[in-house]
Image (tube, rainbow, N blue to C red):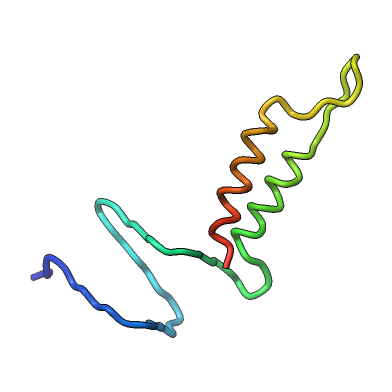
Length: 87
């Protein structure tokens, strides 16, 4: 039978597997100061941050001249929030 919970408290925990599957029927929560997802050549948080930077500085041509995107302030806020996860 499955246990209700397993608690392990360590300073460092490493797994070296060919495949790692984390599966939950309800909710998966990770609480950490920084977070990295990498494939060895690119880091996901950095890609998202760069994308938000490009979008937040993009302008569109209008009759009045170049204007930022309508939600540029929201994009800048999202970039700041995502950057807090960078390791």
